[in-house]
Length: 180
Image 1 (tube, rainbow, N blue to C red):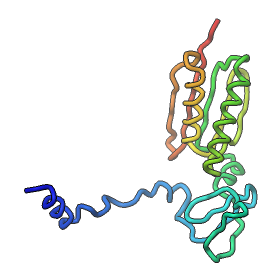
Image 2 (image 1 turned 135 degrees about the vertical axis):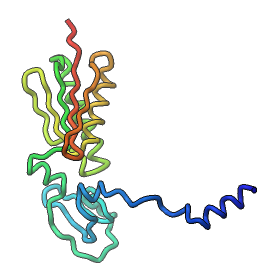
Image 3 (image 1 turned 180 degrees about the vertical axis):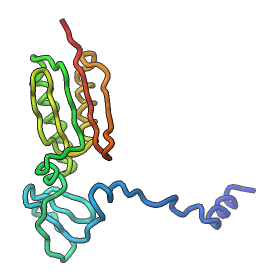
Image 4 (image 1 turned 30 degrees about the horizontal axis):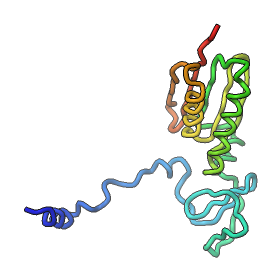
């Protein structure tokens, strides 16, 4: 049998049909997709076409003829409720490198926010020799930790990543080596 006839037999059997049901992860996290146009009253993010976007610019228009409803977006709601999906704990950060570390964290956060208005750094707290960073997205926390590890290669130990029993919550601990 040649390849053409095998392919046509597969198509007849229905092998080109989608495999399995669509993932419910996004629906579980944000609820079912909304059909309305929504605008966040806190950050001006706009929800349309099944995702959140930065506030609309002059030339960018929504094709729907529906009025926008004013709500609080999921990221602002997380900040308000003091909830987070990502926690990074930096231990033993050298005093002379703290400014550099904090600048890197803020820059990664700004780039992530520019791509997606739901990706935000909630807080950065310094206590003693530790820095705690909370984020609205676990992927953002992982990205920040990887960027720190890459930037301070040789000065950090292995990253410890722990997933919570709650879905989508991650804690990442990154130790800086004590250099005497």
